[in-house]
Length: 231
Image (cartoon, rainbow, N blue to C red; front, side, top):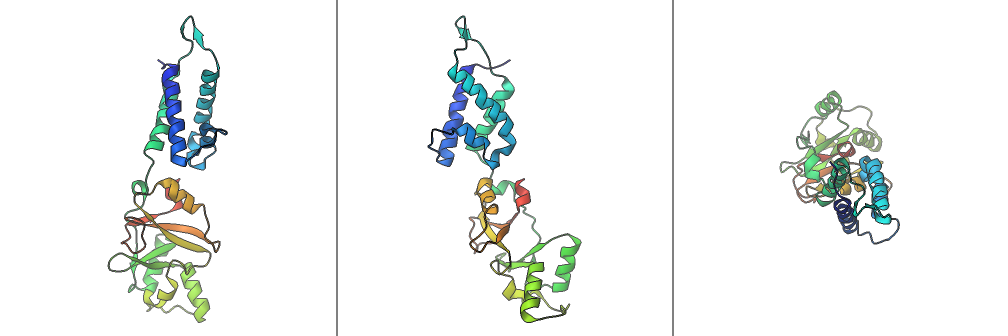
């Protein structure tokens, strides 16, 4: 059984108001439905919301009464999609909902050779190095190794070395072509996606976001968020 066009139009108005408020969108054209459908974040709703927009336009610009009653009803499935979108706008998913809590990490006194072996065995490309309070010292990766070999003209890696030997190359702003950031638990996934889609002033791409309570880099690291966690 379907629902009335009045109920449907009320939901459409609620959606448009929420969208305008969320994105501070004040333009008349294109309307919220069109902009929503063109937003990468909501790609999975594109087809359904296009159809809902078309239904809305028909109802808004046509006389559909038959003998004093509404001539059409809107399917429950259609209403459910619209309600789901409204729920998404009212309660957007947060970083705390999806980030990886059981993040693997190493300490500055750990062995370089063992760290490399562990990363190879578990297909880890970037290994965070934390201090005793779980604050981030930096990130160990192939980038780190090659940068040190190049700058110090080292030919062979000493298997007895610890990560302390790489301290100068671990900080998150020392990696060639890539960088790392921080994000808070209560930030939306939209915010995280925007960060991953941008490059910094040096043209470096963002590889990982380390999660702290409020996104400050001087707070203990609670976990990590990658672009793949947002798919």
